[in-house]
Amino acid sequence: MFYILMNKQTPICKLQIDTSDNFIIEDILEVYNTAAFPIGVDVVAGKPQKKSLAKWWAGRAVPGSRVGGSSFEARYNVKLAALPFKNHGLSLSDQYWIKPCDADIKWEGVNFFANEFSLDVGNALFDSSYQSVQLDFMSPDNTSDGMLPKRWVRDELTGKTVLLKAGSGPLEQEPFNEHIATKIFERLNAVPYVDYKIVRDGDKFLSSCENFITTDTELVTAASMMLTLSPVTTKHSNKYDFLLKCCEQFDIPKVKETLDVMLAVDYLICNSDRHYGNFGFIRDVNTLKFKGVAPIYDNGTSLWNKYAQVGKNFEAKAFANSHEENIKLITNWDLLDLQKLKDIDDIVKSVLVFNDYLAPKRIDDVAKAVKEQLKKLQKIKEDVK
Image 1 (cartoon, rainbow, N blue to C red):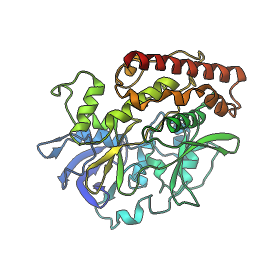
Image 2 (cartoon, rainbow, N blue to C red):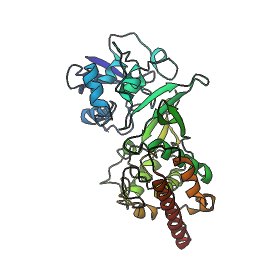
Image 3 (cartoon, rainbow, N blue to C red):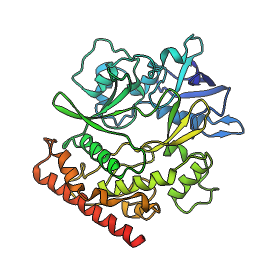
Image 4 (tube, rainbow, N blue to C red):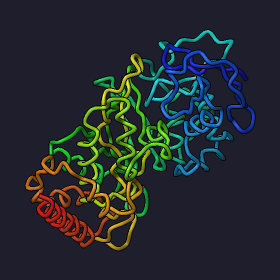
């Protein structure tokens, strides 16, 4: 089929897409606006590269690693890769969408920021026991990323879109970790962060956070940002320095300050999943100028929730190979008033005590381990200063 790739009301290009089997971009037929393309899509001599755009589009679908994804495909006889074609490719993280060439539809009438959306897909992906004879596929959950079960809802009081995210077995700890990270960022009061709360859904606890993207903005991940320059031709000393150089070309404010605080907190809570896809930047889709760094989000895979041994440090997934190496990248130590976290062990225990899957001894062990991380971080700060 033939589609127009749109960025809000702006046509970007005309595409030929396989919608019957592989659900991939087969060809770029016409280009209307290269400036409005997704950040990170390779544009050479004014022409976007099909392979690069196809990779971006493939990343728009719910990943095959999503917990419950294969069960969803079997129950409803639909591939996860097909879901973006059932909601015009619309998301709550940006304003990109696809319009069939013969369709008379406008962004104002279909986007999920201003219009109601179905909860069917989110419920079906979230809960394998959810049953519906025929799903309503007009949902932002068709294009949500990540491995953990999640779903979008709209707050009835505020009208804001809210993301609910579950934990994973056997400890179901991620929602609690998100709330602990929120408390730490709140104490430090140094950079913007997503405010994660804990809500109850039946017999499960979920994390809840308001969407920080609006009808006028988009989230650009660090992974996409790092595709805007060539690491071969750009002089840099490490991946951290390379990302800073990528951001410099767009005049994004306070990048280093935010990254330094993020790395420090990741060290404290031993975040084992801070990859380049779960932190990023915010761009204005109308002016195509960057507004700043996105508030820090996705802190759930931490506090040893995936490991039997509490207190062990893990390899890092961004910048360096370990948290110990990443800490050496920090230079803005004045942003880190670690005295504000002197009772961090009590903060941890006050939240984890509500997790029925955690034994009291493990809660104590986690709290002590985080306290030890704080002591080590304080020593590193003193040595540097």
